Image (cartoon, rainbow, N blue to C red; front, side):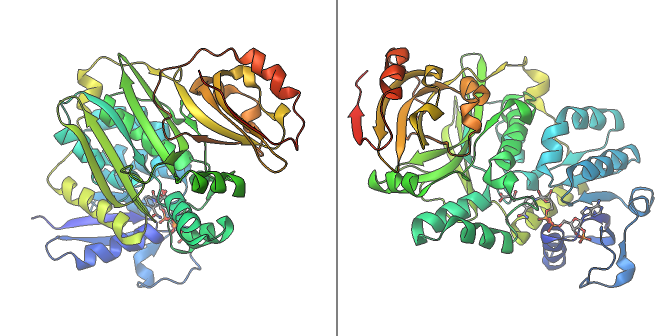
Length: 425
Ligand SMILES: NC(=O)C1=CN([C@@H]2O[C@H](COP(=O)(O)OP(=O)(O)OC[C@H]3O[C@@H](n4cnc5c(N)ncnc54)[C@H](OP(=O)(O)O)[C@@H]3O)[C@@H](O)[C@H]2O)C=CC1
Ligand SMILES: N[C@@H](CC=O)C(=O)O
């Protein structure tokens, strides 16, 4: 095997994880010859001559074979990746925001330059999901890809449910352990798993969907009453990313979901991620592995570097071979919506309502709403409002209750009245 000369950008959690995995791999012939970082004053555990703050020292170095981009700034990462490709170097990156927001450009640039960009570490850490979709499922029509795509929020939810730790403490731990993004709102508001879903949409269904077109709701608005609701019903909550093909359309979104104890995602805890693939031929498969952290992500990056050493490239088979399936947000889902007072939610946005509950400290409704309506609604931006998919959320059969009648009835209810009612549709 040829000795590979690596130029590395970033020496934080993942960069150091890569360094460890590279040095402890017994059969990998490669070394890091230069590391570009941002802050020259920071104390490093490696000799100073290895570090630089000048990107060009790596991009323009003809002795460097592969560029590995592991920084926490998506804009600068895009520059590094595109300039490296233009300079004739293949690239490994773990930056899901950068990849998801620019995938079409990156695919075109790979075609133009003949060089490769690999990004296994960008999606679900150590789970080899992109290569699995590319190679193993390259010709199988898929029906669904779903799962837990964010380690930090899964860690937080595990600590909240299993140890009754409060949200700020659990988030702080996820940050200290290196799981969270530098801006943790990307994790807790569901952006990070949305970037990953956007990338998987390309490899699973052949479609490029910009993350801005995918709905994401997070776990940052969960209130004590929502947790009590879950516990009282024997449920837990997971932040679930999902995409499914129904007919000739693909639907996808990231929304927290109540999960029953016997559900395959219920036992996925801490920073572990899980991906379920449902294919027309293979039926269901479940992949589980650590989705965040220094060594698991470093291992995914090392695997990509190794793949480049035998000239591996993503072929984007489904994207090139299949007609573009349209992506749609017109998918009705059943949601639990909790809020402080009845006028905060516009019930006319709902297709129907199955349950409503008002008490002094907790109001909620359960009903079907279209993802597109949810995405566009003003009320959804209200920080008092928390939306969780019900355990049956994606069963699409809708009742036909007229919500305008209910709206009037509910708006007359005063906060403090304790009414619990199931409405049969
Ligand atoms: N942490 C994880 O578990 C995972 C992270 N990722 C992704 O990997 C990437 C890196 O994450 P992580 O290691 O956690 O981040 P860290 O914050 O731990 O490290 C970021 C590194 O990037 C360097 N850096 C920032 N901006 C620049 C720049 N413009 N030029 C050169 N270097 C720069 C920093 O330099 P300095 O040291 O000087 O501050 C630092 O070394 C991110 O895209 C993240 O989303 C993917 C999967 C898992
Ligand atoms: N912040 C991310 C890191 C890995 O992608 C996560 O928590 O999953």
